[in-house]
Image (cartoon, rainbow, N blue to C red; front, side, top):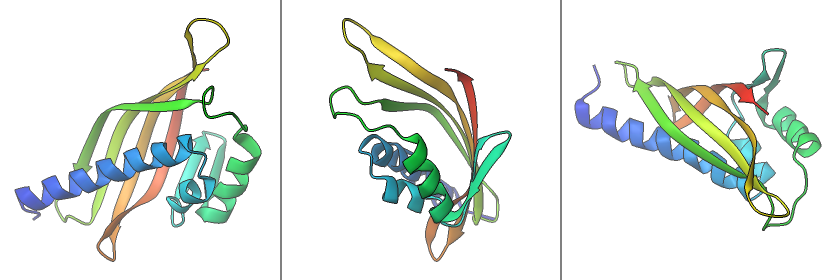
Amino acid sequence: MISRDDRREAESQIARLIHSYFYRLDERDLEAVAAFFENAAWHISPERATHGKAEKLAWLRENTPAHDAYLGPQHLIGNVLVDVADDGRTATSLSYFIVSQLVDGPGIHVAARGRYADSFALRNGQWQFTERRVHVDRR
């Protein structure tokens, strides 16, 4: 059984991993984004999944539009709920995301919103994604 302190530390490390993904994505550091899923399945939609870093990177390069730093999309994440298993070796999380983008003229465009359902494993002392399921609510 995992101790309360170890559970809190694991929750903190996993939340940092989730947030780091978004920072790298907004910076368009596609290599780093793909590396988060080196040993993981990433379910882009119910019909499509990528497995491993190379496949994820290829998908990102094909589907991530170039942009200037000012108008580019920004990913906002909230309501991150992390559950660490009693063995302290695996965990799951649920979170919401909103993708916003500045547009010409006043206002901000919501490009997408949805939820992530993630799974993690502790490997060599580091938490890593093992699976991500994307549920887009609206585009």
